[in-house]
Image (cartoon, rainbow, N blue to C red):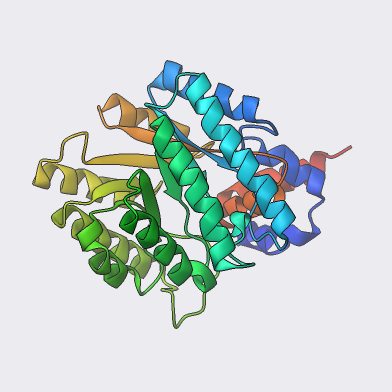
Length: 301
Protein backbone atom coordinates (compact mmCIF):
# COMPACT_ATOMS: atom_id res chain seq x y z
CA UNK A 1 0.00 0.00 0.00
CA UNK A 2 2.84 2.38 0.87
CA UNK A 3 4.60 1.63 -2.41
CA UNK A 4 1.43 2.32 -4.38
CA UNK A 5 0.95 5.58 -2.49
CA UNK A 6 4.49 6.66 -3.38
CA UNK A 7 3.89 5.81 -7.03
CA UNK A 8 0.69 7.88 -7.00
CA UNK A 9 2.67 10.89 -5.79
CA UNK A 10 5.50 10.55 -8.33
CA UNK A 11 4.81 14.02 -9.83
CA UNK A 12 5.77 15.47 -6.44
CA UNK A 13 9.10 13.63 -6.25
CA UNK A 14 12.06 15.86 -7.18
CA UNK A 15 13.34 15.01 -10.65
CA UNK A 16 16.95 14.50 -9.47
CA UNK A 17 15.74 11.58 -7.37
CA UNK A 18 13.87 10.02 -10.27
CA UNK A 19 17.02 10.58 -12.32
CA UNK A 20 19.15 8.75 -9.76
CA UNK A 21 16.86 5.73 -9.70
CA UNK A 22 16.35 5.74 -13.47
CA UNK A 23 20.00 4.98 -14.14
CA UNK A 24 19.38 1.26 -13.76
CA UNK A 25 16.79 1.37 -16.56
CA UNK A 26 18.67 3.59 -19.03
CA UNK A 27 22.03 3.01 -20.70
CA UNK A 28 22.96 6.69 -20.42
CA UNK A 29 22.57 10.00 -22.19
CA UNK A 30 24.58 9.21 -25.31
CA UNK A 31 24.64 6.73 -28.16
CA UNK A 32 28.11 5.66 -27.04
CA UNK A 33 26.55 4.64 -23.72
CA UNK A 34 23.96 2.51 -25.51
CA UNK A 35 26.53 0.82 -27.75
CA UNK A 36 28.76 0.10 -24.75
CA UNK A 37 25.80 -1.44 -22.92
CA UNK A 38 24.86 -3.57 -25.93
CA UNK A 39 28.46 -4.77 -26.22
CA UNK A 40 28.66 -5.62 -22.52
CA UNK A 41 25.38 -7.54 -22.60
CA UNK A 42 26.62 -9.55 -25.57
CA UNK A 43 30.16 -10.21 -24.33
CA UNK A 44 29.33 -10.96 -20.71
CA UNK A 45 25.96 -12.71 -21.00
CA UNK A 46 25.35 -13.55 -24.65
CA UNK A 47 22.29 -11.29 -24.66
CA UNK A 48 21.04 -9.51 -27.75
CA UNK A 49 19.74 -5.95 -27.61
CA UNK A 50 17.39 -3.48 -29.23
CA UNK A 51 18.38 0.16 -28.91
CA UNK A 52 15.82 2.90 -28.42
CA UNK A 53 16.25 6.68 -28.50
CA UNK A 54 14.16 8.03 -25.64
CA UNK A 55 11.40 10.40 -26.64
CA UNK A 56 7.78 10.26 -27.76
CA UNK A 57 4.69 12.36 -28.50
CA UNK A 58 6.65 15.08 -30.27
CA UNK A 59 4.56 18.00 -31.48
CA UNK A 60 6.76 19.66 -34.10
CA UNK A 61 8.14 18.44 -37.42
CA UNK A 62 11.51 19.86 -36.50
CA UNK A 63 11.74 17.71 -33.39
CA UNK A 64 10.57 14.62 -35.27
CA UNK A 65 13.34 15.12 -37.82
CA UNK A 66 15.91 15.41 -35.03
CA UNK A 67 14.64 12.14 -33.57
CA UNK A 68 14.83 10.56 -37.01
CA UNK A 69 18.48 11.56 -37.32
CA UNK A 70 19.17 10.20 -33.85
CA UNK A 71 17.67 6.83 -34.82
CA UNK A 72 19.60 6.88 -38.08
CA UNK A 73 22.77 7.38 -36.06
CA UNK A 74 21.89 4.27 -34.04
CA UNK A 75 21.83 2.25 -37.25
CA UNK A 76 25.22 3.62 -38.29
CA UNK A 77 26.69 2.80 -34.87
CA UNK A 78 25.31 -0.75 -34.82
CA UNK A 79 26.88 -1.32 -38.23
CA UNK A 80 30.20 0.35 -37.36
CA UNK A 81 30.62 -1.69 -34.18
CA UNK A 82 29.85 -5.02 -35.80
CA UNK A 83 26.64 -5.56 -33.80
CA UNK A 84 24.06 -5.91 -36.55
CA UNK A 85 23.69 -9.67 -36.02
CA UNK A 86 22.71 -9.15 -32.38
CA UNK A 87 21.44 -5.58 -32.03
CA UNK A 88 18.45 -3.86 -33.59
CA UNK A 89 16.66 -0.53 -33.50
CA UNK A 90 13.35 0.19 -31.78
CA UNK A 91 11.42 3.30 -32.80
CA UNK A 92 8.36 5.05 -31.37
CA UNK A 93 6.03 6.31 -34.11
CA UNK A 94 5.02 9.43 -32.19
CA UNK A 95 8.67 10.45 -31.86
CA UNK A 96 8.76 10.47 -35.65
CA UNK A 97 5.64 12.55 -36.09
CA UNK A 98 2.66 10.17 -35.97
CA UNK A 99 0.78 12.61 -33.75
CA UNK A 100 1.43 15.42 -36.24
CA UNK A 101 0.73 13.92 -39.65
CA UNK A 102 0.52 10.23 -40.54
CA UNK A 103 2.03 10.63 -44.01
CA UNK A 104 4.92 12.68 -42.63
CA UNK A 105 5.54 10.03 -39.98
CA UNK A 106 5.33 7.22 -42.51
CA UNK A 107 8.01 8.87 -44.63
CA UNK A 108 10.31 9.11 -41.62
CA UNK A 109 9.68 5.54 -40.52
CA UNK A 110 10.07 4.20 -44.04
CA UNK A 111 13.39 5.98 -44.50
CA UNK A 112 14.71 4.36 -41.32
CA UNK A 113 13.34 0.93 -42.25
CA UNK A 114 14.94 1.06 -45.69
CA UNK A 115 18.28 2.15 -44.26
CA UNK A 116 18.09 -0.62 -41.66
CA UNK A 117 17.27 -3.16 -44.38
CA UNK A 118 20.19 -2.04 -46.52
CA UNK A 119 22.52 -2.43 -43.52
CA UNK A 120 21.06 -5.81 -42.56
CA UNK A 121 19.56 -4.56 -39.27
CA UNK A 122 16.14 -5.42 -37.83
CA UNK A 123 13.83 -2.58 -36.77
CA UNK A 124 10.98 -2.90 -34.29
CA UNK A 125 8.04 -0.47 -34.38
CA UNK A 126 6.94 0.09 -30.79
CA UNK A 127 3.28 0.30 -29.84
CA UNK A 128 2.13 3.29 -27.84
CA UNK A 129 -1.29 4.08 -26.40
CA UNK A 130 -4.60 3.44 -28.14
CA UNK A 131 -5.02 6.72 -30.03
CA UNK A 132 -2.16 5.44 -32.21
CA UNK A 133 -2.86 1.69 -32.46
CA UNK A 134 -4.63 1.70 -35.81
CA UNK A 135 -2.16 4.09 -37.40
CA UNK A 136 0.82 2.10 -36.11
CA UNK A 137 -0.56 -1.16 -37.47
CA UNK A 138 -1.36 0.55 -40.78
CA UNK A 139 2.24 1.76 -40.95
CA UNK A 140 3.51 -1.78 -40.41
CA UNK A 141 1.22 -3.22 -43.08
CA UNK A 142 2.18 -0.53 -45.56
CA UNK A 143 5.88 -1.23 -45.09
CA UNK A 144 5.36 -4.94 -45.56
CA UNK A 145 3.17 -4.36 -48.63
CA UNK A 146 6.07 -2.42 -50.12
CA UNK A 147 8.34 -5.41 -49.58
CA UNK A 148 10.16 -3.99 -46.55
CA UNK A 149 10.32 -7.09 -44.38
CA UNK A 150 13.04 -6.30 -41.81
CA UNK A 151 10.44 -4.79 -39.48
CA UNK A 152 8.41 -6.09 -36.57
CA UNK A 153 5.55 -4.83 -34.46
CA UNK A 154 4.53 -4.77 -30.78
CA UNK A 155 1.17 -5.83 -29.37
CA UNK A 156 -0.14 -5.46 -25.82
CA UNK A 157 -2.12 -8.15 -24.03
CA UNK A 158 -3.86 -5.56 -21.89
CA UNK A 159 -5.88 -4.45 -24.93
CA UNK A 160 -9.12 -6.26 -25.68
CA UNK A 161 -8.49 -5.99 -29.42
CA UNK A 162 -5.12 -7.74 -29.49
CA UNK A 163 -6.26 -11.28 -30.26
CA UNK A 164 -8.14 -10.01 -33.29
CA UNK A 165 -5.16 -7.88 -34.33
CA UNK A 166 -3.03 -11.05 -34.37
CA UNK A 167 -5.60 -12.83 -36.52
CA UNK A 168 -5.70 -9.87 -38.89
CA UNK A 169 -1.91 -10.04 -39.31
CA UNK A 170 -1.69 -13.77 -40.06
CA UNK A 171 -0.99 -13.25 -43.76
CA UNK A 172 2.15 -11.26 -42.90
CA UNK A 173 3.53 -13.83 -40.44
CA UNK A 174 5.00 -10.93 -38.49
CA UNK A 175 7.63 -10.82 -35.80
CA UNK A 176 5.58 -9.69 -32.80
CA UNK A 177 6.88 -8.48 -29.48
CA UNK A 178 4.11 -9.48 -27.11
CA UNK A 179 4.03 -7.50 -23.87
CA UNK A 180 1.44 -6.65 -21.26
CA UNK A 181 1.45 -2.91 -21.94
CA UNK A 182 1.90 -0.08 -19.47
CA UNK A 183 -0.23 2.81 -20.74
CA UNK A 184 -3.31 3.83 -18.80
CA UNK A 185 -6.31 2.87 -20.87
CA UNK A 186 -10.07 2.98 -20.34
CA UNK A 187 -11.97 -0.14 -19.32
CA UNK A 188 -13.81 -0.39 -22.62
CA UNK A 189 -10.55 -0.90 -24.55
CA UNK A 190 -8.32 -2.57 -21.97
CA UNK A 191 -8.48 -5.26 -19.32
CA UNK A 192 -8.06 -3.80 -15.85
CA UNK A 193 -7.57 -7.01 -13.88
CA UNK A 194 -4.06 -8.49 -13.73
CA UNK A 195 -5.27 -12.03 -14.32
CA UNK A 196 -7.27 -10.97 -17.35
CA UNK A 197 -4.14 -9.41 -18.83
CA UNK A 198 -2.17 -12.57 -18.09
CA UNK A 199 -4.83 -14.81 -19.61
CA UNK A 200 -4.88 -12.70 -22.77
CA UNK A 201 -1.09 -12.89 -22.95
CA UNK A 202 -1.27 -16.70 -22.80
CA UNK A 203 -3.92 -16.86 -25.53
CA UNK A 204 -2.05 -14.43 -27.74
CA UNK A 205 1.22 -16.30 -27.43
CA UNK A 206 -0.45 -19.53 -28.52
CA UNK A 207 -2.20 -17.78 -31.38
CA UNK A 208 1.11 -16.37 -32.60
CA UNK A 209 2.94 -19.69 -32.40
CA UNK A 210 0.13 -21.67 -34.00
CA UNK A 211 0.17 -19.29 -36.96
CA UNK A 212 3.92 -19.45 -37.52
CA UNK A 213 4.75 -15.97 -36.23
CA UNK A 214 8.10 -15.15 -34.63
CA UNK A 215 7.35 -14.70 -30.95
CA UNK A 216 9.30 -12.08 -29.02
CA UNK A 217 8.08 -12.91 -25.52
CA UNK A 218 8.48 -9.67 -23.57
CA UNK A 219 7.68 -10.24 -19.91
CA UNK A 220 9.25 -10.31 -16.47
CA UNK A 221 6.24 -12.11 -14.98
CA UNK A 222 7.32 -15.49 -13.58
CA UNK A 223 3.91 -17.04 -14.27
CA UNK A 224 4.04 -15.99 -17.91
CA UNK A 225 7.65 -17.10 -18.27
CA UNK A 226 6.73 -20.56 -17.00
CA UNK A 227 3.81 -20.67 -19.42
CA UNK A 228 6.10 -19.64 -22.28
CA UNK A 229 8.50 -22.48 -21.47
CA UNK A 230 5.55 -24.88 -21.75
CA UNK A 231 4.51 -23.44 -25.12
CA UNK A 232 8.08 -23.65 -26.46
CA UNK A 233 8.39 -27.28 -25.39
CA UNK A 234 4.93 -28.32 -26.56
CA UNK A 235 5.49 -26.89 -30.05
CA UNK A 236 9.13 -27.89 -30.29
CA UNK A 237 10.16 -24.34 -31.16
CA UNK A 238 13.69 -23.81 -32.40
CA UNK A 239 15.87 -20.78 -31.61
CA UNK A 240 14.91 -19.15 -34.91
CA UNK A 241 11.22 -19.11 -33.94
CA UNK A 242 11.20 -17.17 -30.66
CA UNK A 243 13.16 -15.13 -28.16
CA UNK A 244 12.58 -13.65 -24.74
CA UNK A 245 12.81 -9.91 -24.20
CA UNK A 246 13.40 -7.95 -21.01
CA UNK A 247 13.97 -4.35 -20.02
CA UNK A 248 17.39 -3.09 -19.02
CA UNK A 249 17.77 -3.13 -15.24
CA UNK A 250 14.79 -5.37 -14.50
CA UNK A 251 15.08 -8.87 -12.98
CA UNK A 252 18.68 -9.31 -14.09
CA UNK A 253 19.04 -12.63 -12.26
CA UNK A 254 16.06 -14.03 -14.16
CA UNK A 255 17.57 -12.74 -17.39
CA UNK A 256 20.77 -14.66 -16.74
CA UNK A 257 18.82 -17.80 -15.86
CA UNK A 258 16.93 -17.64 -19.16
CA UNK A 259 20.16 -17.22 -21.09
CA UNK A 260 21.87 -20.02 -19.13
CA UNK A 261 19.01 -22.33 -20.06
CA UNK A 262 19.92 -21.84 -23.72
CA UNK A 263 17.16 -19.43 -24.79
CA UNK A 264 17.79 -16.35 -26.90
CA UNK A 265 17.05 -13.15 -25.00
CA UNK A 266 17.06 -9.53 -26.09
CA UNK A 267 17.38 -6.55 -23.76
CA UNK A 268 15.60 -3.26 -24.46
CA UNK A 269 18.36 -0.63 -24.21
CA UNK A 270 17.05 2.96 -24.09
CA UNK A 271 19.29 6.01 -24.03
CA UNK A 272 18.98 9.77 -24.29
CA UNK A 273 18.11 12.88 -22.36
CA UNK A 274 14.34 12.40 -22.45
CA UNK A 275 14.45 10.03 -19.48
CA UNK A 276 11.72 11.32 -17.18
CA UNK A 277 8.61 9.93 -18.91
CA UNK A 278 10.19 6.54 -19.51
CA UNK A 279 11.44 6.25 -15.93
CA UNK A 280 8.12 7.32 -14.45
CA UNK A 281 6.31 4.59 -16.40
CA UNK A 282 8.84 1.99 -15.28
CA UNK A 283 8.28 2.96 -11.65
CA UNK A 284 4.50 2.93 -12.02
CA UNK A 285 4.73 -0.52 -13.58
CA UNK A 286 6.85 -1.78 -10.68
CA UNK A 287 5.60 -0.35 -7.38
CA UNK A 288 8.17 -2.37 -5.44
CA UNK A 289 10.74 0.09 -6.75
CA UNK A 290 8.92 2.80 -4.84
CA UNK A 291 10.85 1.80 -1.74
CA UNK A 292 13.97 3.07 -3.46
CA UNK A 293 12.28 6.44 -3.97
CA UNK A 294 11.34 6.65 -0.30
CA UNK A 295 14.88 5.79 0.74
CA UNK A 296 16.33 8.37 -1.64
CA UNK A 297 13.99 11.05 -0.32
CA UNK A 298 14.74 10.26 3.34
CA UNK A 299 18.50 10.16 2.84
CA UNK A 300 18.67 13.25 0.68
CA UNK A 301 21.10 15.78 2.07
